[in-house]
Image (cartoon, rainbow, N blue to C red; front, side, top):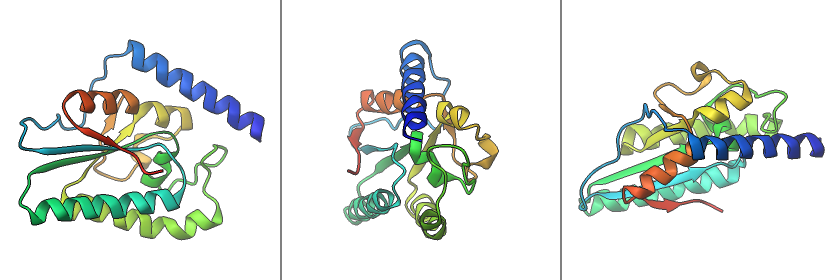
Length: 171
C-alpha cells in the first residue's frame, strides 16, 4: 500500500507541477475581488484529515464573523485539491489513497453541513481542482452542487496571491 501511495502521490505532484508550469487555466470560478478595501484570503485544503478540516472551518468562521462585526468587506476562498477533495463529495473514493474509512463516514455529514454553512451564511467561496478530480476518476457531478472547478488548484492559489489574497493553511 505504501508503494502504491508513494507512486500515486509522485504522479499527482508531477502532473500538478507540469500543468502549473504549462497550462493557462480557464477559470470557471468567480474572478478575484478588486480593491484594497476588501479583506482577501485564500485557504489551501490539500489534506484528508477530518480534524484539520474541522479546525479550518472554525478558523474561517471566526475570521468572517469578526470581519462582519467590524463591517469589513471580505472575499474568502477555500481551494480544495488532492486529499481535500474528499470533503466535497459523498463518493467513497474506493481504490484511492483518500478512500473513506468508517471514522470518516461518521464525521462526513457534520463536516459537509458546516462547510455548507460557511457558503450560505458567510458567502465563503469554494473551488475544486480538476486535475485532482481526473486523477481520482471522480466526475464533477459527484462534487457538492455549486462548487466551481479550476483547472489547477495550485495555480489558482498562486493567481489569487498575485491579486493580493493572503495565503492560509491549517496544520
